[in-house]
Length: 191
Length: 218
Image (cartoon, rainbow over all chains, first blue to last red; front, top):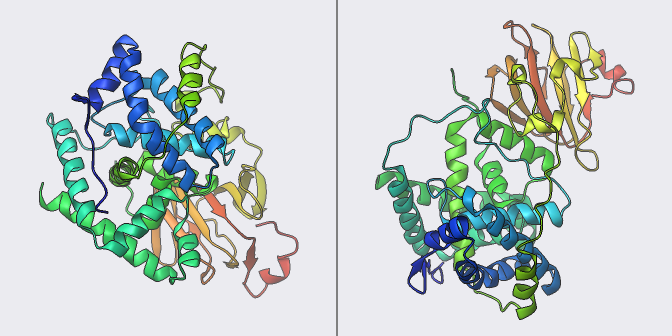
């Protein structure tokens, strides 16, 4: 996955600040910058998932409208900006293309079993995690990286990838597992 | 509080994070996540990978119209959220997102008897032969021995059951494919409530109950 270049800044402004400016000041300029960065990536993602160009652009509007409306709910302690937008795009695609609901946990739900108390420097740790994950993705063997990308881009469960690649399901599973284990190990070891 | 010890296999967590799971299976996984901080953390990491993958994709040009149409919509009024109102807190038995799918406390649902001590409630979710149901078992109740043409995914919501020599309690996930021939039974903790997704009808395999197959809608 050598083409993964994680851009954290646009015109010198970190993504996180752009989202903050939208949340606090309804800053259209900041929103435009987010659109400029993410819309072409969302388009590529949605085209890979089988949308035609028109449908992809309609979905981009829905995703970015959600970014605009829900910017104040973005919590940097939980996800990086690209991850937050990835989850919005994933859910919109399920809602609008598959016409299904996306079952999601509610972090405010009193029935939710809480994690162990989190350290104060959790946010710093998460940013570090993202940096390490990015580095780890770049170092994955080509065949593992390719399957990993396929699994995210093409809305395919493990069994479908297996059929289409002509790979036994076991091979798909073990390659993806190797890829994930490698990522996990890197996160754990460096902590 | 004890945390779940039986988790969904890695592939399910992965496919949940990428968005590839169908709705009933995603509902089981998400409800497990509400009860299991360990898997929640794992899904967060998988989503983080999804974000990195999205950020690293080769961008495709977007038409100017797309941005203009979007800018014109920024001041539109917010759509109202639709969905069930939250249930009173005594039904915390059902965490979100399951609670919003059920809409009623479990005791008020239209339960249908399956066999002695076992009742089911069909959630009418899923396509084809896939079925999403709640099962309620009396303490010690036994589900007749059966096999599957497909797979069976079960999440325990209350109490517990024994299956193939293992005990499953609240938050635990039990997965079986078509090679299993089993007869799960509720433990003696006071019954068991669980959420089950099957993708093909069950087949009874006990020597006598086999003849009941046409009459039971398991």
